Length: 124
Image (cartoon, one colour):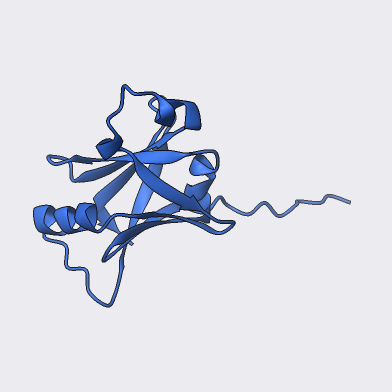
């Protein structure tokens, strides 16, 4: 008997932008399970959002200003960063209309730099 076992393809990392927050789906959240806080960045020319997890030790160091660290809430099926000012900046900078319907984008994990890269050119 020759059995081929079903092996489900890994699901994509998806980041959702809504007015006031950034939500990561379960596959994206796995990279932030031990994060105490995050840093948020923008790469303007390539239209990217950068989300860097910070461990508690990194977050407590005084080499990163408090104004650059943001709380992340990690649940079993999602992660969320609530930051209205950042989302509004993204909306204005990249002409993204966020209303009643949130926008979803593909994201990838950069293993070398240990950060999530969200491509605003790849709406799902």
